[in-house]
Image 1 (cartoon, rainbow, N blue to C red):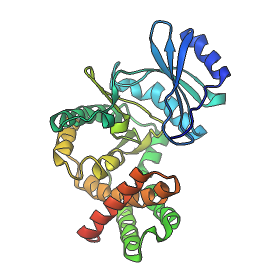
Image 2 (cartoon, one colour):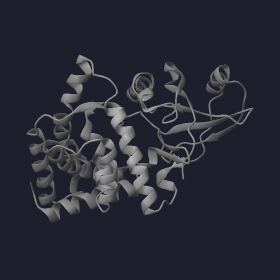
Image 3 (cartoon, rainbow, N blue to C red):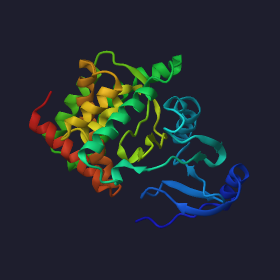
Length: 294
């Protein structure tokens, strides 16, 4: 468990200028060093969140998403940006009800409902207005860029992969380069139940720091490697409300992307002491090895 991170006094003063007096502050950061998030409770029990982004890139992505894309989700389906403070990479956000779906111990039927609502929200996000020229160029380059990152991840992972596993990753990266056109849009970038807030009012999405223009199928990789691998009913529920089945090109890309996610997990997870991410990578890679090379 990481030590509690105190909210800097200057940031509390900035927040209070916008939302009024704060009566209590709770460290709500994830359990990793660069996560800095605080739950601010006001005098009337109203909560806001103050987040300091881990990098300028993440701050730019998240603040842009809240201004231009997130409103398409609907009034209660995501936090709203109250203000931002670029010099501190700080975002002041409204709170949404509920708790992360990952933490609630939901039964099978409830999880299908959660995935169904997630499909609806992801469709809204992915279709939230046309991309401008620069964003479309970035989005259309996202799959080749992912393929080009394979060697970097393989180098970082080192001997955590044997030679056959390394070749399988290279095979999938090569195939990803040959994927035909796929739909693009603005993706969430970390689309998984830890960022799905579930309550009696339904589902809301949080944490848009990895939001960016990309192939839409990239938003399904973590779900495919965790939630859907052993539970096809959840995938079916998601895609039903998403509004369409994936194209052959998207299915092809998704398989390749799961391989690249596996090596990324096996590079990043052990280096950062994240057993869950490491296990995700190993489980995916073992499955792909059993299924054979593309």
